Image (tube, rainbow, N blue to C red):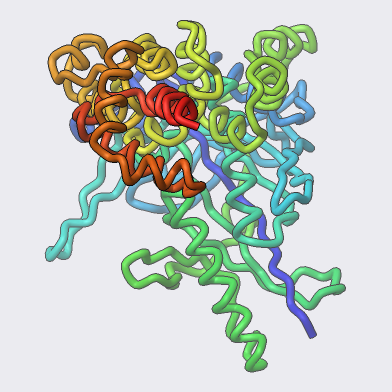
Length: 476
C-alpha cells in the first residue's frame, strides 16, 4: 500500500528588538562571548524578569501577518529542563495560553494551491549557545543569546513533502521580513526550523510515530534532511520494521548526508510546565491589536498584485523579485530612475542575484544600474560591454559613464561612420554579396562578422544589420 509523508514544522524566529525579552541586554549579533549578559538573563538568584513591550508588539504583528487570532489574555510559563546553555534550568515560554492561534499560509507547489494551517505562535526566550572544541573533551558556553526574544511558529501536520515544506518556509520568511518582525538571517540563527516527520498509509487517519529533526540552518539543508528522513522511515516500513521508528530527536549531519539520533523526544508533561510566578498575564485590548495590524507595511501578496499591474512582468519574475524585501525595494529604486521595468527585472534576476547570494550588500547603486540599462537601450554600449561595466561597478566607485569612457566601450551608432565601414565590407566581399543576392541569406551573417571585426566590436549590431540589408537591397 502506498505511503504518504506527514510533516509539521516548528520555526523559531528571533524578534527585531534592540534588547532581550526580560532584561536590558543588547541582542546585537557577533559580540564577544558572554558580554551581552546580566544577572537576569544568566538566571542569578534574586533577579526578576520584566517583559519587553516591543517583543509583544512584534508577536502580534507576526500573528496578524499570518492570519492568526490574537488571544487578548495570554501568559508565560516555565518549561523545565536541564541543559548547559540554559542557566536557570528552565525556559520562560508560553504553554496553554499562547499569544496567537489558528493562522494559515497559502502556498503553491507545481501549480497547485494549498493551505498550511498554523496551530499557534508563542513567545519565549532563547537559550545560549554551546561551542564544542574540536579534538578536546570540553564544550564552551556563550550566554549572549540567552534571553533573546523568540516566537515559535507551530504548524499543523498539513505538509506532505520536502518541496511543500520549502515552499511554506520561503513564503513564511518573506512575510516575516516584510512585516519587519525579524531579519530572518538563517546564517545568524535568526530563523531556525525543526521538522516533525512521520509516514502512514494513504487513507489512514491515525498519525504514526514522529521523528523531530534539528540542526538545519538553510533551505537547501532542510530539503535534503527531510528527503533523507522520509527515505529512512519508508525503508523501515517496507521491511516491516516500523517498530524501529522511535519518538526521538535526530540531527541532520550534512557531511554524512543523513539524520543521526540525538536523544529521546520528550512529551509536554516531561517539561513540568507551570505559570511563571514572576510574570503577570499579558492582557491586550482589541484597539491595541487593531492599531498594530494597521501599521503593517505592504505584504508580499499585495506587492505582487501591484507589480503585475504596474510593470508588465511575468508571474515568475515577480515571485523572484518580491521573494526578498530588499531586492523588491532595489528593483523599484532602479525603475524610479526611468529604467525599462522589464530590462531592470532581467538584470536584477540574472546578474544582481548571481553576485548577491547570501550577502545583504547589493554593491551597485540603483541609479548606476538604471544608467547602465539606459545606455544599452540608447545603443551607446552593447550587451556584452554592459556586462563588463557591471563587473567593474562591483569593485569601483565609478559611474557607468566613466567606466565606458575609460575602457573605450562606447558602441558605434553613428549612421555615417557605420555606412562607411559597411560599404567597405561590401566592396571587399563581392562573392558574399553575390551569394546573398542569389538567395543565400546566411551570407549576411558573414558580412556582419566582417563589420564587427572592422569596427573592433563597437558597431551597434542591430543598426549595422539594418544599414547592411538596406545597402544590399539597393543592388537588386
